[in-house]
Amino acid sequence: MAIPTKEEMYRALEERHGAELQKKLTAASVAVCGLGGLGSNIAIALARAGVGRLHIIDFDRVDISNLNRQQYYPEQLGLYKAEALYDTLSRIAPYCGIRRESVKLTEENIPELLADADIICEAFDAADQKAMLVNTVLEKMPEKYLVSGSGMAGIAPSNTISTRRVTKRFYLCGDGVSDVADGMGLVASRVLVCAGHQAHAVIRIIAEEYDV
Amino acid sequence: MLTINGKEYDFRGMTVAEVLKELGYGEQRVAVELNESIVPKAQYGTTTLFEGDHLEVVRFVGGG
Image: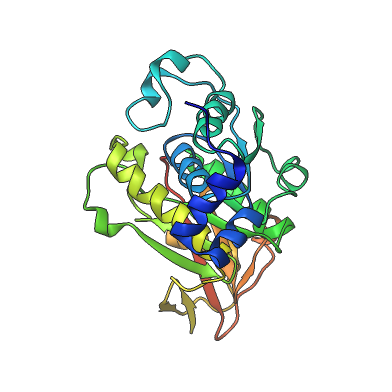
């Protein structure tokens, strides 16, 4: 079956979200940094919601160990995550403007690479990399909104995961304590809860609803 | 007294780096906000805390 036209897709979104919110979502530009369990799920939620421009970034390739929670398929093993997710997002939201990059984000390249985004999602795996991205954005790009995730390993209750507004433009999702380094694995359902918190924080910022 | 993550401490005169060490936070895994402004990592050793300061230490854990 032929895919719907851009106008048909837009009207369907407008009917569900309301004209005012859909206009804001379509005008928004969001960067998702890290395309693992958090980032792949965040990007899909935002694409489905009709966010107009997505910038997806990850240096890594799809590995068999990712399939328990990340939005990739067995036939995508070995592909760059940014390329594999680009294919999936293009099928979900064919009219979304998606920029993808298979590079490692560093203190040096972050200001230039993330300049196009209104809102930046931190969705890395390693704690020191999370801190690096958050510190770099807060120090060098104070005009951006930043939504970070920390603490979603293991099978503790989903209700321990929350969204906190640390400062005016910095939101932190997760339980803050469950660390993979403590031997807890990452389980699809709980990672999804945190990804859902992050994606929803982004949607609320776009809607200009800033409280949590 | 000053406030760190909502709790009161008598850490007046200490630097951010000293406070992080005292409370057991690793510098590579935190972001620090002093009175709603980010403290650049390069300034942890030279930023001194005063009476009434509000320090927020965000600690990151692994997983994503």
